[in-house]
Length: 287
Image (cartoon, rainbow, N blue to C red; front, top):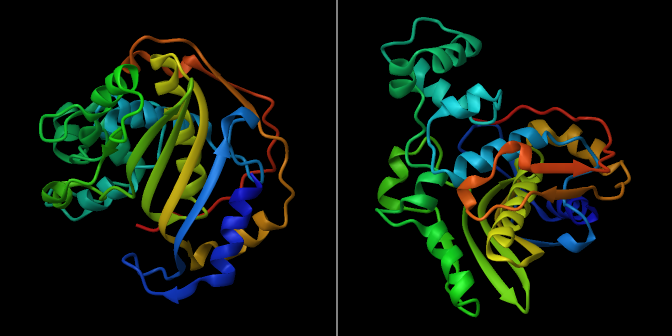
């Protein structure tokens, strides 16, 4: 994962100090691309331990078109908690509940979850129901029947619905590419939290590539990650420097069980091996 460390250094070397929506402050640069060959190993960061369980469950949540926090809460995945909780604290129903108390209500109270636990038409909704159209299934069928198409695209950026989303999509569009019997995937990410978000995004879309390759009978080949606004939050600077001081280790291996349909994958179908990362580095998400 030397590519990722080079990405961090590029932001530090060429970025500019800017204000941002969260009020945290960032160092930002515009336009960057990384490439990961999945034949060389699974691109899961080794300069810090990455929580793969959260990545897998979030991806399955996307693929199924789910937008309720309950599935993630039931599997102890916290990466989406901050946004609906913040909205809940601003509502008339808020009575001083802590984050933990809020999540327990999401798990146990269906009416509360329906009112305060839906994230709006975020990623999975757009993938599977973009104004009534199932983009992901359509692209899978096109890969099978018309692999040379230059229209193998899934788009999560639906402007009229952005106001209803807990967070407008950062990783907003992806395109597949078939050459011989190999499948590649390019992601365009408009906004990239380099320290916290990008390691998740790389692993998530590499997994999506593997899943789609499996159901289309192809071999996963290259994940190309194209970024618009690439930034490091000011409260992540020490963590970034620590990560840059570490030497990358060999990439792990990922195997997945065969499935005929993209919706059939379960958490247990993904097996990671030979993962030997440096210790976890924690950082606070900017909301």
